[in-house]
Length: 321
Image 1 (cartoon, one colour):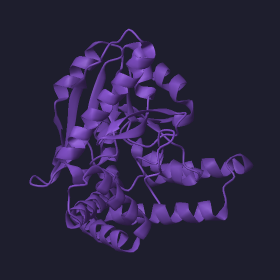
Image 2 (cartoon, rainbow, N blue to C red):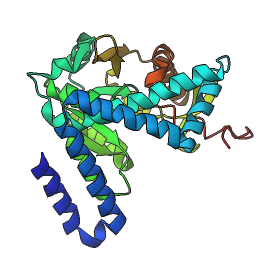
Image 3 (tube, one colour):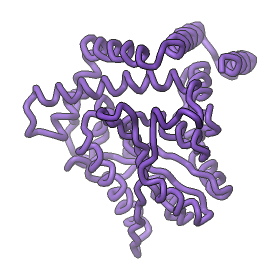
Image 4 (cartoon, one colour):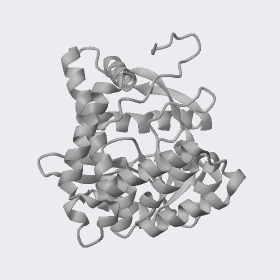
Protein backbone atom coordinates (compact mmCIF):
# COMPACT_ATOMS: atom_id res chain seq x y z
CA UNK A 1 0.00 0.00 0.00
CA UNK A 2 2.72 2.46 0.97
CA UNK A 3 4.56 1.73 -2.26
CA UNK A 4 1.44 2.49 -4.25
CA UNK A 5 0.99 5.78 -2.43
CA UNK A 6 4.58 6.73 -3.17
CA UNK A 7 4.13 5.79 -6.82
CA UNK A 8 1.04 7.95 -7.05
CA UNK A 9 2.90 10.80 -5.41
CA UNK A 10 5.79 10.45 -7.83
CA UNK A 11 3.49 10.24 -10.85
CA UNK A 12 1.74 13.47 -9.99
CA UNK A 13 5.05 15.13 -9.16
CA UNK A 14 6.36 14.23 -12.63
CA UNK A 15 3.42 15.99 -14.26
CA UNK A 16 4.96 19.22 -12.98
CA UNK A 17 3.24 22.30 -14.24
CA UNK A 18 0.23 20.37 -15.51
CA UNK A 19 -0.72 19.40 -11.96
CA UNK A 20 0.35 22.81 -10.54
CA UNK A 21 1.33 21.23 -7.24
CA UNK A 22 2.06 23.93 -4.68
CA UNK A 23 3.95 23.83 -1.40
CA UNK A 24 0.63 23.78 0.46
CA UNK A 25 -0.57 20.86 -1.65
CA UNK A 26 2.55 18.92 -0.67
CA UNK A 27 2.18 19.85 2.98
CA UNK A 28 -1.48 18.84 3.01
CA UNK A 29 -0.59 15.56 1.31
CA UNK A 30 2.13 14.62 3.80
CA UNK A 31 -0.03 15.50 6.79
CA UNK A 32 -2.95 13.43 5.47
CA UNK A 33 -0.65 10.55 4.55
CA UNK A 34 0.93 10.64 8.00
CA UNK A 35 -2.45 10.65 9.74
CA UNK A 36 -3.72 7.71 7.67
CA UNK A 37 -0.52 5.72 8.26
CA UNK A 38 -0.61 6.44 12.00
CA UNK A 39 -4.26 5.43 12.33
CA UNK A 40 -3.70 2.39 10.12
CA UNK A 41 -0.92 1.12 12.40
CA UNK A 42 -3.08 1.38 15.51
CA UNK A 43 -5.36 -1.46 16.58
CA UNK A 44 -8.73 -0.83 14.97
CA UNK A 45 -10.44 -0.17 18.30
CA UNK A 46 -7.78 2.34 19.33
CA UNK A 47 -8.02 4.11 15.96
CA UNK A 48 -11.77 4.47 16.42
CA UNK A 49 -11.33 5.84 19.94
CA UNK A 50 -8.76 8.33 18.67
CA UNK A 51 -11.03 9.49 15.86
CA UNK A 52 -13.95 9.71 18.28
CA UNK A 53 -11.91 12.19 20.29
CA UNK A 54 -10.96 14.08 17.14
CA UNK A 55 -14.64 14.24 16.16
CA UNK A 56 -15.57 15.65 19.56
CA UNK A 57 -12.88 18.33 19.22
CA UNK A 58 -14.12 19.16 15.71
CA UNK A 59 -17.66 19.56 17.03
CA UNK A 60 -16.44 21.86 19.79
CA UNK A 61 -13.97 23.98 17.84
CA UNK A 62 -15.37 24.07 14.28
CA UNK A 63 -18.23 26.54 14.71
CA UNK A 64 -18.91 27.00 10.99
CA UNK A 65 -19.67 23.31 10.45
CA UNK A 66 -21.59 23.10 13.71
CA UNK A 67 -23.69 26.10 12.68
CA UNK A 68 -24.51 24.60 9.26
CA UNK A 69 -25.41 21.26 10.83
CA UNK A 70 -27.72 22.80 13.41
CA UNK A 71 -29.38 24.95 10.76
CA UNK A 72 -30.00 21.91 8.57
CA UNK A 73 -31.50 20.02 11.49
CA UNK A 74 -33.70 23.01 12.27
CA UNK A 75 -34.95 23.01 8.65
CA UNK A 76 -35.53 19.25 8.65
CA UNK A 77 -36.91 18.89 12.19
CA UNK A 78 -38.41 22.24 13.28
CA UNK A 79 -40.40 20.43 15.97
CA UNK A 80 -37.28 19.16 17.75
CA UNK A 81 -35.84 21.06 20.73
CA UNK A 82 -32.35 22.47 20.32
CA UNK A 83 -30.93 19.88 22.72
CA UNK A 84 -32.15 17.04 20.50
CA UNK A 85 -30.61 18.62 17.40
CA UNK A 86 -27.30 19.05 19.17
CA UNK A 87 -27.32 15.41 20.25
CA UNK A 88 -27.94 14.20 16.69
CA UNK A 89 -25.30 16.52 15.25
CA UNK A 90 -22.71 15.41 17.80
CA UNK A 91 -23.39 11.77 16.90
CA UNK A 92 -23.11 12.69 13.23
CA UNK A 93 -19.62 14.06 13.95
CA UNK A 94 -18.86 10.80 15.75
CA UNK A 95 -19.96 8.93 12.65
CA UNK A 96 -17.45 10.95 10.62
CA UNK A 97 -14.72 10.06 13.09
CA UNK A 98 -15.55 6.37 12.83
CA UNK A 99 -15.54 6.67 9.03
CA UNK A 100 -12.02 8.11 9.09
CA UNK A 101 -10.70 5.35 11.36
CA UNK A 102 -12.24 2.63 9.19
CA UNK A 103 -10.94 4.29 6.02
CA UNK A 104 -7.39 4.25 7.40
CA UNK A 105 -7.73 0.52 8.02
CA UNK A 106 -8.80 -0.40 4.47
CA UNK A 107 -5.42 -2.13 3.82
CA UNK A 108 -6.17 -4.62 6.61
CA UNK A 109 -9.46 -5.92 5.27
CA UNK A 110 -9.77 -8.87 2.91
CA UNK A 111 -12.24 -11.60 2.04
CA UNK A 112 -11.23 -13.63 5.09
CA UNK A 113 -12.04 -10.95 7.67
CA UNK A 114 -14.38 -8.41 6.02
CA UNK A 115 -17.47 -9.87 7.71
CA UNK A 116 -16.12 -8.65 11.05
CA UNK A 117 -16.58 -5.11 9.72
CA UNK A 118 -19.55 -5.24 7.35
CA UNK A 119 -22.13 -7.75 6.11
CA UNK A 120 -24.61 -7.74 3.24
CA UNK A 121 -28.28 -7.00 3.72
CA UNK A 122 -30.42 -7.54 0.62
CA UNK A 123 -27.66 -8.83 -1.64
CA UNK A 124 -30.28 -10.64 -3.72
CA UNK A 125 -31.48 -7.28 -5.04
CA UNK A 126 -28.05 -6.55 -6.47
CA UNK A 127 -27.74 -10.09 -7.84
CA UNK A 128 -31.06 -9.81 -9.71
CA UNK A 129 -30.05 -6.46 -11.17
CA UNK A 130 -26.66 -7.80 -12.24
CA UNK A 131 -28.24 -10.81 -13.95
CA UNK A 132 -29.87 -8.49 -16.50
CA UNK A 133 -26.46 -7.86 -18.02
CA UNK A 134 -26.85 -4.10 -18.41
CA UNK A 135 -24.66 -3.08 -15.52
CA UNK A 136 -26.05 -1.70 -12.26
CA UNK A 137 -26.49 1.94 -11.25
CA UNK A 138 -26.11 2.37 -7.48
CA UNK A 139 -27.82 5.32 -5.86
CA UNK A 140 -26.06 6.24 -2.65
CA UNK A 141 -25.38 9.18 -0.34
CA UNK A 142 -23.13 10.63 2.33
CA UNK A 143 -24.71 8.27 4.80
CA UNK A 144 -23.17 5.93 7.36
CA UNK A 145 -19.69 5.01 6.15
CA UNK A 146 -20.23 5.78 2.47
CA UNK A 147 -16.55 5.23 1.64
CA UNK A 148 -16.84 1.66 2.90
CA UNK A 149 -19.71 0.68 0.58
CA UNK A 150 -17.86 0.42 -2.72
CA UNK A 151 -14.69 -0.81 -1.01
CA UNK A 152 -16.46 -3.67 0.80
CA UNK A 153 -18.47 -4.64 -2.27
CA UNK A 154 -15.16 -5.00 -4.09
CA UNK A 155 -13.67 -7.10 -1.29
CA UNK A 156 -16.68 -9.39 -1.59
CA UNK A 157 -15.83 -9.81 -5.27
CA UNK A 158 -17.96 -7.13 -6.95
CA UNK A 159 -15.80 -4.08 -7.79
CA UNK A 160 -17.62 -0.79 -8.28
CA UNK A 161 -16.83 2.31 -10.30
CA UNK A 162 -17.79 5.43 -8.36
CA UNK A 163 -18.24 9.05 -9.36
CA UNK A 164 -16.08 11.60 -7.51
CA UNK A 165 -15.34 15.29 -7.70
CA UNK A 166 -11.63 15.78 -8.24
CA UNK A 167 -9.94 17.62 -5.40
CA UNK A 168 -8.06 20.84 -5.95
CA UNK A 169 -5.02 19.11 -4.47
CA UNK A 170 -4.04 16.35 -6.94
CA UNK A 171 -1.65 14.74 -4.45
CA UNK A 172 -4.38 14.39 -1.84
CA UNK A 173 -6.84 13.16 -4.46
CA UNK A 174 -4.36 10.51 -5.57
CA UNK A 175 -3.80 9.41 -1.97
CA UNK A 176 -7.52 9.06 -1.23
CA UNK A 177 -8.12 7.24 -4.52
CA UNK A 178 -5.37 4.75 -3.67
CA UNK A 179 -7.37 3.72 -0.59
CA UNK A 180 -10.75 3.80 -2.29
CA UNK A 181 -9.56 1.58 -5.14
CA UNK A 182 -7.76 -1.07 -3.07
CA UNK A 183 -10.48 -3.66 -3.60
CA UNK A 184 -10.58 -3.30 -7.40
CA UNK A 185 -12.92 -0.34 -7.80
CA UNK A 186 -12.10 2.77 -9.78
CA UNK A 187 -13.06 6.41 -9.67
CA UNK A 188 -14.89 8.29 -12.41
CA UNK A 189 -14.33 12.03 -12.72
CA UNK A 190 -17.55 13.97 -12.18
CA UNK A 191 -16.49 16.37 -14.95
CA UNK A 192 -16.71 13.50 -17.45
CA UNK A 193 -19.71 11.84 -15.82
CA UNK A 194 -21.97 10.94 -18.74
CA UNK A 195 -19.36 9.53 -21.11
CA UNK A 196 -17.52 7.45 -18.53
CA UNK A 197 -20.64 6.13 -16.80
CA UNK A 198 -22.26 5.10 -20.08
CA UNK A 199 -19.06 3.37 -21.11
CA UNK A 200 -18.85 1.51 -17.78
CA UNK A 201 -22.48 0.38 -17.97
CA UNK A 202 -21.99 -0.89 -21.52
CA UNK A 203 -19.23 -3.08 -20.11
CA UNK A 204 -21.68 -4.43 -17.53
CA UNK A 205 -20.01 -2.68 -14.59
CA UNK A 206 -21.64 -1.38 -11.41
CA UNK A 207 -21.46 2.39 -10.92
CA UNK A 208 -22.17 4.29 -7.70
CA UNK A 209 -23.46 7.89 -7.69
CA UNK A 210 -23.87 10.13 -4.64
CA UNK A 211 -27.22 11.89 -4.95
CA UNK A 212 -27.55 14.02 -1.81
CA UNK A 213 -25.49 17.15 -2.48
CA UNK A 214 -26.71 20.62 -3.34
CA UNK A 215 -26.47 21.46 -7.04
CA UNK A 216 -26.34 24.78 -8.82
CA UNK A 217 -29.73 25.77 -10.28
CA UNK A 218 -28.59 25.04 -13.84
CA UNK A 219 -27.21 21.61 -12.89
CA UNK A 220 -30.06 20.05 -10.95
CA UNK A 221 -33.81 19.85 -10.54
CA UNK A 222 -35.81 20.97 -7.50
CA UNK A 223 -37.46 18.12 -5.61
CA UNK A 224 -38.79 17.84 -2.07
CA UNK A 225 -36.33 16.82 0.65
CA UNK A 226 -37.70 17.06 4.20
CA UNK A 227 -40.55 19.14 2.84
CA UNK A 228 -38.35 21.77 1.18
CA UNK A 229 -37.28 22.21 -2.45
CA UNK A 230 -33.70 20.95 -2.80
CA UNK A 231 -31.67 21.30 -5.99
CA UNK A 232 -30.73 17.69 -6.73
CA UNK A 233 -28.63 15.99 -9.37
CA UNK A 234 -30.73 14.62 -12.23
CA UNK A 235 -27.78 12.68 -13.69
CA UNK A 236 -28.77 9.25 -12.31
CA UNK A 237 -32.29 9.63 -13.71
CA UNK A 238 -30.97 10.79 -17.09
CA UNK A 239 -28.59 7.83 -17.31
CA UNK A 240 -31.35 5.41 -16.28
CA UNK A 241 -33.76 6.92 -18.79
CA UNK A 242 -31.24 6.57 -21.60
CA UNK A 243 -29.98 3.06 -20.78
CA UNK A 244 -32.85 1.44 -18.81
CA UNK A 245 -30.17 0.11 -16.50
CA UNK A 246 -31.43 -1.49 -13.27
CA UNK A 247 -31.28 0.79 -10.23
CA UNK A 248 -30.32 -0.22 -6.70
CA UNK A 249 -30.16 1.92 -3.58
CA UNK A 250 -26.99 1.06 -1.67
CA UNK A 251 -26.34 2.45 1.83
CA UNK A 252 -23.89 1.50 4.58
CA UNK A 253 -25.68 1.49 7.95
CA UNK A 254 -23.87 1.41 11.28
CA UNK A 255 -25.40 -1.07 13.73
CA UNK A 256 -24.18 0.07 17.13
CA UNK A 257 -25.45 -3.03 18.94
CA UNK A 258 -23.45 -5.36 16.71
CA UNK A 259 -20.48 -2.98 16.33
CA UNK A 260 -20.39 -3.46 12.58
CA UNK A 261 -22.07 -2.20 9.40
CA UNK A 262 -24.75 -3.48 7.06
CA UNK A 263 -24.38 -2.87 3.34
CA UNK A 264 -28.06 -2.49 2.56
CA UNK A 265 -29.33 -2.97 -1.01
CA UNK A 266 -32.84 -2.03 -2.03
CA UNK A 267 -34.32 -2.22 -5.56
CA UNK A 268 -35.47 1.08 -7.04
CA UNK A 269 -38.44 1.07 -9.38
CA UNK A 270 -38.45 3.33 -12.43
CA UNK A 271 -41.57 5.51 -12.76
CA UNK A 272 -42.52 5.84 -16.42
CA UNK A 273 -44.07 8.99 -17.86
CA UNK A 274 -45.08 10.18 -21.31
CA UNK A 275 -43.14 13.40 -20.83
CA UNK A 276 -39.34 12.78 -20.80
CA UNK A 277 -38.55 15.91 -18.78
CA UNK A 278 -41.25 15.18 -16.24
CA UNK A 279 -40.01 11.60 -16.03
CA UNK A 280 -36.59 12.88 -14.98
CA UNK A 281 -38.08 15.11 -12.29
CA UNK A 282 -40.49 12.45 -10.98
CA UNK A 283 -37.78 9.81 -10.67
CA UNK A 284 -35.28 12.21 -9.09
CA UNK A 285 -37.97 13.03 -6.52
CA UNK A 286 -38.55 9.29 -6.03
CA UNK A 287 -34.85 8.62 -5.44
CA UNK A 288 -34.70 11.47 -2.95
CA UNK A 289 -37.74 10.19 -1.03
CA UNK A 290 -36.07 6.80 -0.62
CA UNK A 291 -32.99 8.44 0.82
CA UNK A 292 -35.05 10.64 3.13
CA UNK A 293 -36.70 7.57 4.61
CA UNK A 294 -33.31 6.25 5.68
CA UNK A 295 -32.14 9.62 6.99
CA UNK A 296 -35.30 9.84 9.10
CA UNK A 297 -34.67 6.35 10.45
CA UNK A 298 -30.97 6.99 11.15
CA UNK A 299 -30.65 10.78 11.45
CA UNK A 300 -27.24 10.65 13.12
CA UNK A 301 -25.71 8.84 10.14
CA UNK A 302 -26.25 11.53 7.50
CA UNK A 303 -23.81 14.35 6.67
CA UNK A 304 -25.69 17.31 8.13
CA UNK A 305 -22.77 19.74 7.74
CA UNK A 306 -23.34 20.18 3.98
CA UNK A 307 -25.52 23.16 2.88
CA UNK A 308 -28.10 20.92 1.26
CA UNK A 309 -30.66 23.69 0.67
CA UNK A 310 -28.21 26.39 -0.43
CA UNK A 311 -29.58 26.76 -3.98
CA UNK A 312 -33.10 28.18 -3.86
CA UNK A 313 -35.88 28.40 -6.43
CA UNK A 314 -36.04 31.80 -8.09
CA UNK A 315 -37.57 34.35 -5.72
CA UNK A 316 -37.04 32.30 -2.54
CA UNK A 317 -35.04 33.75 0.32
CA UNK A 318 -31.67 32.21 1.29
CA UNK A 319 -31.84 29.68 4.10
CA UNK A 320 -28.29 30.19 5.37
CA UNK A 321 -26.50 33.27 6.70
